[in-house]
Figure 1 (tube, rainbow, N blue to C red):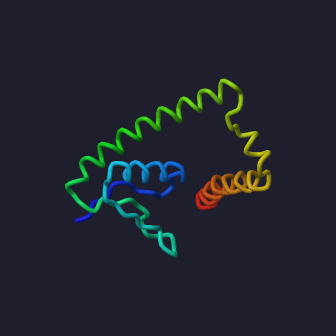
Figure 2 (spheres, rainbow, N blue to C red; figure 1 turned 90 degrees about the vertical axis):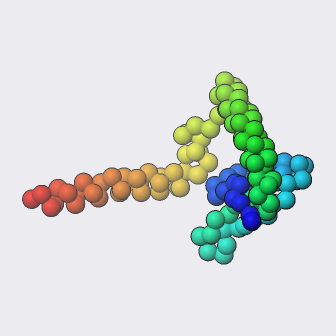
Length: 121
């Protein structure tokens, strides 16, 4: 019976590719499910054989620890060099979206306050 190994929702494409390559390299029999046409199903990697699950889980845990360390070191390097992404960079990339998000946050904070003050009168 198949067993869930790795959920793919909000996972970067490069990480998914690396996990697929890792499982293939160690000849772990797996398959992938997508989010479906409506995007409500669970995209994931599944191990077909439960006997391989423990080995696959150990490989994935080791990989994720190494990736976490690698990404953290990359962030520290970029920050030290002054090349990491800042709020100002986000504004420069897409000012319209940035302002729209600020407006949405403002509305979400203001509307409940306004409703509560009107109800308390």
